[in-house]
Length: 263
Image (cartoon, rainbow, N blue to C red; front, side):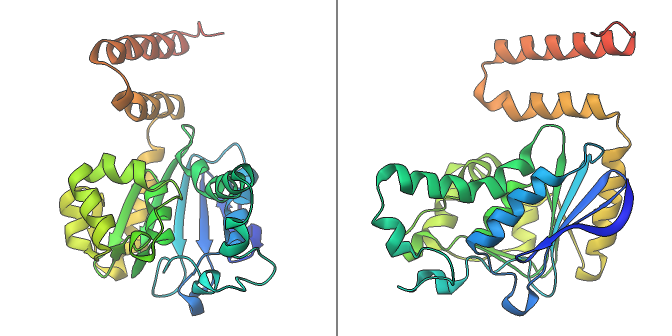
């Protein structure tokens, strides 16, 4: 599939596909790509709409900021138009509240699928939900003006959009706690130095750097990359011996496939 016509364009999210690369763009620069439940639903829909030919997903934001986080109107008693307010959600049952948060998370979790490699192209602010959206991706390329901050704890909340697991994995428990508890800004150079970002480039080079990275990822055979990603993602939850066994099983599958002996 080769087309730059949008596969999806709604609620601040646009999905385009060109060959094996899909681009998901946040399209509300006037509000610094602030997020809402409608945007989260559109992100989840974008994940479901991906053609099977897609191998790399690039996530970016229009304008000067990647995403400045949740739309502040969500914190008001009336909430966002057409959406239950936080106060309404809090009045629900435990099951209803859990289901509402799980539905929001669906916009994020698909970016970690083993059959895809996702890249966040981050410029300007990535705050709260914006930070977590960048963390939902496998890789992060950041412009030199990028600034990350996790402000949920400062607002009396916790990061709940799948951001805590990758943050601890990337920077360690102590630094992750400090970042979340203080709500401070993490500048681009610190992000690169601590492993939060894979690469920092001048803002004008961000798109080119992401294209180069996507091209490098596409150079590897797809099934080999899928197996490798699964090995690396699951390694922290396995013992050394269990990981050795997983490596053997994955390599056996690859050897049989290359020899034309796979089922």
